[in-house]
Structure formats: structure tokens, C-alpha cells
Length: 263
Ligand code: MN
Image: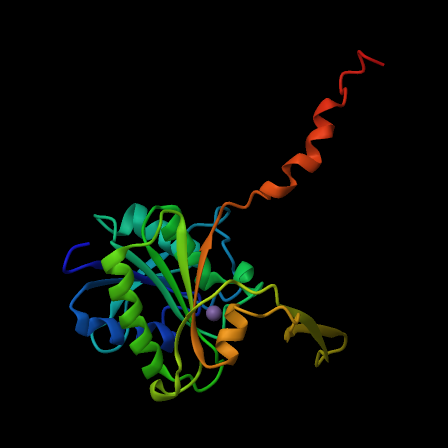
């Protein structure tokens, strides 16, 4: 990695989200070149969706304290794809997504647009990191900043194995209260849906999805446990989605006659 890295920043909370600004503010003193491409509006839970039935509008925008970037009317994955293909004249050395307001642990990772932006970097063979803080309100941004700097320097210096992205979750504590880094597996804990039913002012009803984390009791060594205990979770993820252990279970079907010739 070069001394001065080119780092692409994105997120799913939107171009004007405080977590993205906090990430920019935290990394700027390191002296790297920071390029921002983020969704124009909030895209939380957009997962790895991409926009193909509509045009992708891009406009330059300004954040605070010198932050400039591209606001894209699309998803997190659109932003990173567009940045790598069109907006940047050279590929970045690193993709960093976040800092998301709210944790991305357990099965939430599947729905996460924050993780998807980083995954898009990983799929393009660029070391990529997703950062989230365990708070929807009053996040400790200074803790996020400290963690972002340490992780970016580590991954910038050593890279990541090909195909692996680093999913980082930060406990919502002041820096001096955080117990340290913990390398974790991703829990199977998931959110149990709660659909709030509400009345429309002019009759009828609508639903608003909320959820509650279901603890499976098998959290040992996981991202969920680390956060609960005040550690920063470092969970490596990859995208070989083949269930290798199940291949043999299906093999008998290969001997089945489809043509009808051997009936
Ligand atoms: Mn989000």
C-alpha cells in the first residue's frame, strides 16, 4: 500500500449522514486522499440491491469541513460500482463504508447496505471495511473515529485476504470505556419482526416494520456477544455462498433419469 492511500468512502445512511461526516473527519488527519460516493437518501436495509430499471443521477455535493463527494440517487452498491467504473480515474486502495448508525451484527448483515457497499469493494478485489456503531441515537462519534483510524491503518498496511471483507461493530461507549478489539464470528441472532399497525388519517391502516433482536443462546465468540461485553467486534466475512457440506446430500438426484428413455 502507498503511504498516501486513496480511500473511497460510502455508506447506506445517506450522503448527509453524521456517521459519514464523522468517518471523513476522523480519516482526514491521516493525510490520505478521501473520495466520497454515497446515496442521496437513506438506503438502510437496501442490502446489495442495484438500480437497473431507472437512471442513476449523480451530483457533486459538499459536506462539512472540506468534505466533498458525489451524491448518487441509488443504492450503496450502485455508489461503489459507479465510483469504481466511472467517477474515479484510478481504483482506490481501500473502500470504507459507514459509520452506520445501528449495529450490523448477526443475520442483519444480510440486509445491510453498509456491509453491501464494502462487499462491492471486496468483489472488485479492493480491501474493504464496513463500520457500524451500536446506537441509533446519540452515538459516540469520537469512539468511531478512533476505531476507524486504527482499522484503516491496519488494513491499509496489511491488506485483507482476497475475497474477505472486514465487518466492524463498535460499542456505543466513550473511548476509555471500550475494552478493546475482539475477533469474532457472525452470530445467527436475528431480528424478530414486529409490524406496528397504525391508522391512516383518512381511513384504513398501514404497517411499519420494527424488530427485536432474538438471542439464540449460541452467542459465544460472536459479534453480538463482543458488542454486549463492550468490545469492538472484528468479523471477517466472505461470499462463497456454496454449502459445501450439503453437496453430497444432493448427488443422488444426479442419477435420476430426466429424459424418460429408461422408464
Ligand atoms: Mn444504515
